[in-house]
Amino acid sequence: MTSEHDITRVVLASGNPGKIRELKALLGPAGIEVLPQSEWTVPECDETGLTFVENAILKARNASRHTGLPAIADDSGIEVDALDGRPGIYSARYSGPDADDQSNNTKLLARMEQVPDERRTARFRCVMAFLTHADDPSPILAEGSWEGMIARAPAGSGGFGYDVVFQLPEYGCTSAELPAEVKNRISHRAQAVQAMVGRLIRRLGRR
Image 1 (tube, helix red, strand yellow):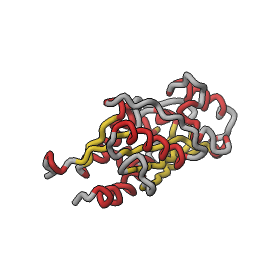
Image 2 (cartoon, one colour):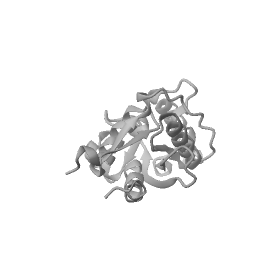
Image 3 (cartoon, one colour):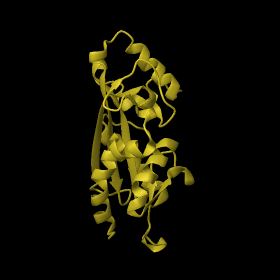
Image 4 (tube, one colour):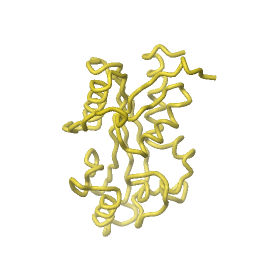
């Protein structure tokens, strides 16, 4: 059993409630307390990177610099094969500067309307970066990828983002219809966390 003195506090470079909820559930059992950067006055980071890796590192450095804590960040999105991998790193703002989940999904489904079922392949991709301090020259990186299809219409009320249109043929439902405990075991973010945890514990000197 983990005691209060064994807890390691790490700031999460995100204000996304869905990400915060998922990462708390995934990292909590390892004795890592995930605190959202909204608990400090951390300004939003300009995501000027051209890859998920670059953006994850930028966000982690920004959060660590403004809080003085180790920081973890992920950059994730959905890659649709019929759209040449778009929206990719632009997933969160796919429908414009005032984008939200609904407008992003509406735009994606409109773009995919004429695409036949066999060509609707897609994947969620997540790259996670961890830094012990803002100038850490050796970020820990981990990645996860989750294969699926783009559904014809939204379904489900769980998750966030594109979960409602991400169809999982092997489960016969969308990601938004999966129980949270299943999603937290198989998702792109879960894969990245699982790849990260052992390295993270070693870096933090945890036992």
